[in-house]
Image 1 (cartoon, rainbow, N blue to C red):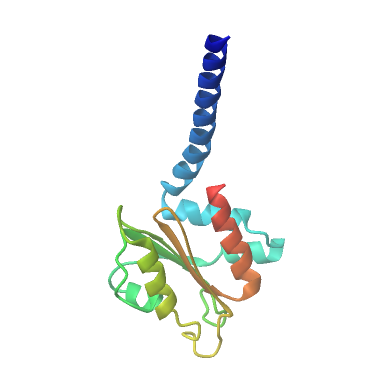
Image 2 (cartoon, rainbow, N blue to C red):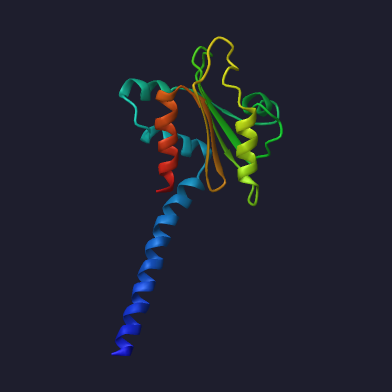
Length: 163
């Protein structure tokens, strides 16, 4: 009877480890993809009506580098491996979505604090974003300034990448 119990427990432990590994693998595979692919997945799964989804899918995507990161992030203190910005072509819409991939071992919480502290929701002068969102899944950081109607669905879509 002890052998059967031990064998059953071993099988149960093995199955639970395999189950956890599959979930992690899916998240890891999405987050290991190119940031443009991650952005596409966020936009595809965000809970928008068709009109809003079409508008956002047509926003311009720009690669972050030393020449534009200071303005986009509000600071030059943030160190990142790669980054992209998604924003409308016209600045009359207070919206920017930034995805950053940090170096392995980077202090993610410190980076999020720097981004939050330096966010300027009035950077567009004539319009102001209602929400500032700074979230992460592993070493991928979402930094967004937008109105609530855009910020909440996009934040939820990003965070759902980890499920």
